[in-house]
Image 1 (cartoon, rainbow, N blue to C red):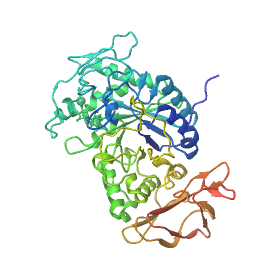
Image 2 (cartoon, rainbow, N blue to C red):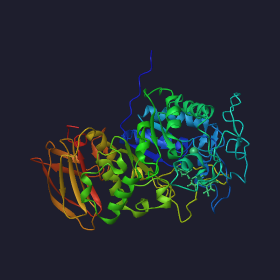
Image 3 (cartoon, rainbow, N blue to C red):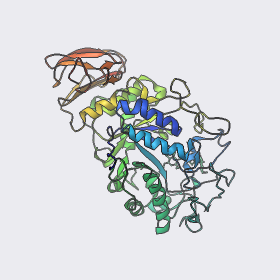
Length: 475
Ligand code: LM2
Ligand code: CA
């Protein structure tokens, strides 16, 4: 009999940055599936450089953005077998795996200029002679790079940004159909294992037409079915706008990130009920985030280090219908931006333990964990009424499906909110999980009566109620 198609829990994606494959698999089963997450963005699974010491760090996290081959055999996060097991177990929990695909470039300076990589492949910059270890002989060597062969210097030149080297990384000549064939071969090798989506690293550094051709070569996804979900990492500017990539998939919206993180940081959120099309991207075109693995290091506005206010911003992002959510989930890091994840002395990453302060696990925070359920329950409804009180307080309805309020001030917000919700006792999913199996609410309950509820929202906290998280029946 034909296998039954898998169905994703929803559209929200959590980036389990640098997690081991086996830890991701367990998280899908114990937490992400039950909480209603639809996808996990994993760190790049292709063989990468190994740098015992670079920029003051042992095994910096960014090793993974310097591919050595497209072999999945061994990264710092586990083996190919563990990767395959993760994809299957997450699929069974209704969670799609999104692979971070590094296709613009290969290595830079690498391990003192040359290999071996994490799976043992010997390489040097501009020579990657065993891309798949499958007897095909598929390789990259001169002139599969360029045509520029020097570092980007004029960021106002579209041709330089796309054809020269980002950070001196060997820039693949995607103008060559053979190069595009090999990139698509790699992407198809993970699709065939059940990978359902991609984050395209450095997409803006690849000409749009070349990327369109690569995407056209991709297989349909087994399991979940249909075309792979592709979103492009584009830091839009006047030279290359976000919208250049919108015909090719969704696009990361750094303009949203700056506005929303900045607004929550400064306590100016009252204007956020009606979000503009930041960067020219409609909600349907945008991937949104409060921080990502780059911004949390290079230009932090709000991160886990800011505590409650940061998590409140995450809860807002998940309550507002604009965009596809990409939530950052981190390991703790100090002042060195290159610091890698908790690792053993040979550079392999430790299993994640969210109870250990080395891992932050933002997606398990009490202000975040219940919000995928809110997003899923309110899918397809817009914002139907709005309440503000000064600059730092905002509430809105999602039709008769949900209601959310956010208090980005240092004082409690006490008032009565009118809603279109059916009367009942609701879990506050902005303060904890709703367990559908037991009806338990870890975040406490709020009673809606005559369509209204009265509550006191503490400083830097929120309320989120939805019709699928009610106690005493009616779920
Ligand atoms: C990205 N998106 O477009 C990633 O989100 C970002 O994290 C990547 O940079 C970048 N593009 C390339 O994929 C990271 C990291 C860099 C690091 C690169 C390559 O932020 O610091 O660059 O990965 O590993 C490092 C050195 C840099 C050096 C380069 C090449 O920091 O100084 O450049 O390697 O050897 C000379
Ligand atoms: Ca390029």
